[in-house]
Image 1 (tube, helix red, strand yellow):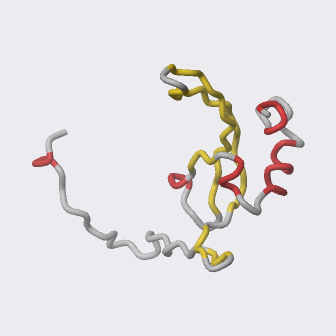
Image 2 (cartoon, helix red, strand yellow; image 1 turned 45 degrees about the vertical axis):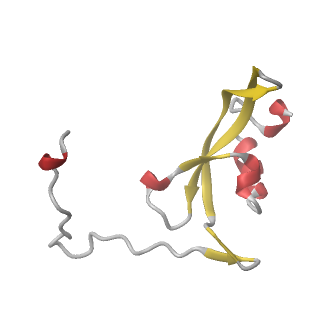
Length: 106
């Protein structure tokens, strides 16, 4: 699509169609988004250069739905990116034994 075909943004004339702005949570002086729920998990494979050669690595990622955010803002996060949401990780893993979990990757 060429840039000349784009139209400028216009706010909706219908009331109640805009989402309120997201508010981050202040955790230890750092603004963070709160995890609403974990949707799914997967193992990703990626190459990384180690001592002048490429080696294949695997990493676990969780697809996260952020609290008070739209579905299109869901993202893939590594377990360490979930911070204090480890209880949500456990809640996700219990009923989903077929999905990859941290114990399988370590």
